[in-house]
Amino acid sequence: MFAAPTGEVAIERAVHADELLAAYRLVHDTFVDEGLIDASPSRLRVRACELSPSMATFVARSAGGVVGVMSVIGDSPELGLPSDPVFGRELGALRGRGRRVAEITNLAIAHEFRKTSVFLGLARAVLAWGMDLGFDDGFAAVSPKHGPYFERVLRFTPWGERRSYRLDADDPVRGFRLDLRGFEGALREVDRGLGERAALHAWFFTSNPFRGTSLSTSEAARAAFASEDVPARLRSEEAAPASGLRLRGPG
Image (tube, rainbow, N blue to C red; front, side, top):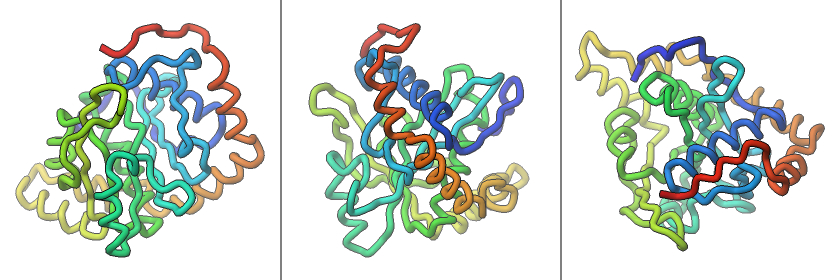
């Protein structure tokens, strides 16, 4: 999971419209290939949360292209969270305890980068954002085949039994929750078990370049959303067929 990818990879927050379009096209293409969504003529997956400046989308770039995406958005009275229609009871239980929840979404990694450190690089950027901004919990709706990775490596715990994310097709997911307040202690415990191979605490804390940067990147994102009218640009591109449309559907 710490294997270096072939070629140089840079991970950063996508702020400008063109960056976000590239990110959401990779999300669309990846989800279509995995049978999670139907193909769109625009090759874009844009929901209400993507139109909010509060959505923090991080990308991994290699050779000028986007090869990985992971987004995170905090709970709000206006939008709630993307998984509310499916895991509303479980998310409501956290809210009822007075806990602030952020949801991790839009996880897409190009096939040739899936057995490299790209996933963990995106994860440490997203979790740094959640910890910097004072959230209590991270939540993710995860395919059952990816659930063990979230549990064993990132120390998420199950928070919602298996169910379908879509009403019109079978799209099995499970809910997982990460206690961000106890995350550092949990990783220290994992590292104690790893002995000389211990690396997770350093990866997410002492050597994490994203810690302490979240306020400045959030301000930059809000400024770009206003100056570039990012929501209007995303809606416009979503309505237009993309060149090179991949017609593969679910399956």
